[in-house]
Image 1 (cartoon, protein in one colour):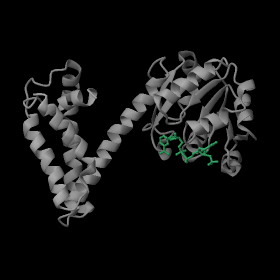
Image 2 (image 1 turned 135 degrees about the horizontal axis):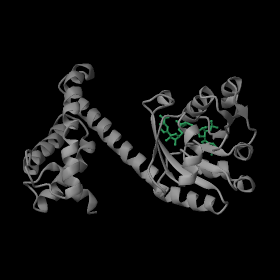
Image 3 (image 1 turned 45 degrees about the vertical axis):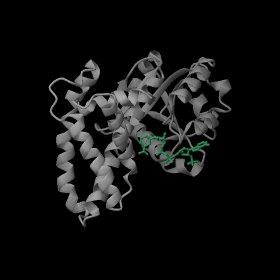
Image 4 (image 1 turned 90 degrees about the vertical axis):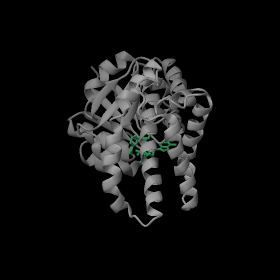
Length: 288
Ligand SMILES: NC(=O)c1ccc[n+]([C@@H]2O[C@H](COP(=O)([O-])OP(=O)(O)OC[C@H]3O[C@@H](n4cnc5c(N)ncnc54)[C@H](OP(=O)(O)O)[C@@H]3O)[C@@H](O)[C@H]2O)c1
């Protein structure tokens, strides 16, 4: 098991990660491009590295938590000589192509690479509500999992390094779909004078009730059978979807959030699936 850990990147999330390690009594080294962001952590017992290279060279496990992969490249730029044998845990949000490129490059230095996706906001870090997705080197995960557990629940998804990033983006896609739907709905209700506060007691239980459809949709998606035991067929639902888009326009609300759903529903209808459940729209999404 690895003993020492560094956090590279002390933005809102990196600071929360470092605080959780300090709380858990871990020997923690920190580095940030803007050095002053380390001051409070150092006062709480963290060790300050003067450079990213020093932060990487000092510890067995190095957690990167930066804006994007351009920042990751910048932080790793001078680290070549100290990367061998290290475990790099990259918790920076990224795309599969970026993950594959960095995993392969670090492999060339003899570095163990673990990619991750943080499913939490900074105040949730270190609480039971936070969970972090990991994928990549199983040896890296085994060696670091006890330290990483300070952040929240560990979910190791497998050896393919892109698993965490793609699952992270998929979960965020569900979240932005929910937020976007809520914002569109609240704007539409607002067009007839309903405030967001007045609308909340309607929309909140409605969304909670609709969540109960997901297990049935998951079964239909995995079996490919969207035609069995249909309760709300696509022909009926597509009328509602088209009405939402048209009513948004007439009420002065930009329908941009709902238009893709209308387009996908029409595509599925045109393919002859009017009597299927709406879960079948996933087939229209898969066929580009
Ligand atoms: N905050 C959240 O709610 C949340 C939730 C889940 C996941 N995440 C993920 O956590 C990661 C960090 O997010 P955050 O909220 O901590 O962002 P943030 O507060 O904006 O911090 C960004 C960090 O990246 C550093 N940085 C940016 N460009 C750099 C460069 N070229 N070289 C070196 N360092 C650079 C910044 O350094 P300076 O201080 O010098 O600018 C700062 O430490 C992101 O991938 C994000 O998706 C965040």
